[in-house]
Amino acid sequence: MNLLLLSNSTNHGQGYLDHAMAEVQAFLGTVRRLAFVPFALADREGYAAKAAARFEREGIAVTPVTPDLAGREALERAEAVFVGGGNTFRLLDTLQKTALLHLLRDRASSGTPYLGASAGTNIAAPTIRTTNDMPIVQPASFDALGLVRFQINPHFIDADPSSRHMGETREERLREYLEENETPVLGLREGAWIRVDGERMALGGANGARLFRRGADPLDLAPGADLTDV
Image (cartoon, rainbow, N blue to C red; front, side):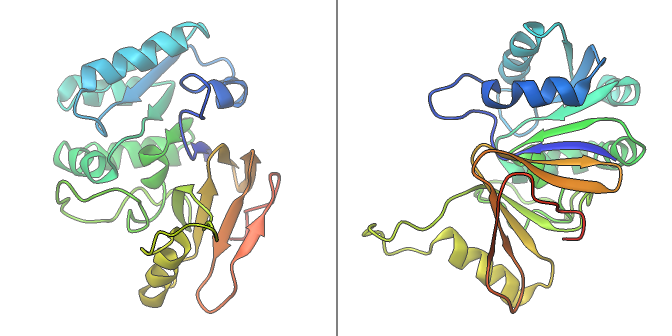
């Protein structure tokens, strides 16, 4: 498979995808037509226009995927696919209802370059059970694309020991997941990404990640860490 899974699409103080665009360009290579899945936001047209404007600066044309036959045809013809961020429950629910989830899995599994950000990265995992998002809709199942073997938690935030907030930290919530599930979780910090090239998986970008396994202490991973055996 050929995947680039971004924790976030926008870094503080930078424009849309600016922090990762050099990596995105290297990932896409000679691709000049990109199918964009905007289902994670309610304003799909506006979201698609935003993505199109950004990639136009790189000489790449964007075709929005719509929840109809034309959308299916766009995915079938795509040189590469970009699944944008937003609400993960809404994204998965729409992909299930339009029967595009299986097609997206088939395209990515067969080698079509798959670029995900935030929610688009969440659905690359086996399930969406480790998303940060509110369940504003109810998908038929939490099962996602399963393009990687481990769960992903984008936008992972380390606990602030000086904070007076008494709610659960992100780490505590992921530990709760592991009380009920065996699958490891990669907490992907802002600015970080996962690069999958065939059988090899590596951590890229900035700020690294934190790996959570059931019955073990969390493990901090630096950029460049090999994720192949996670």
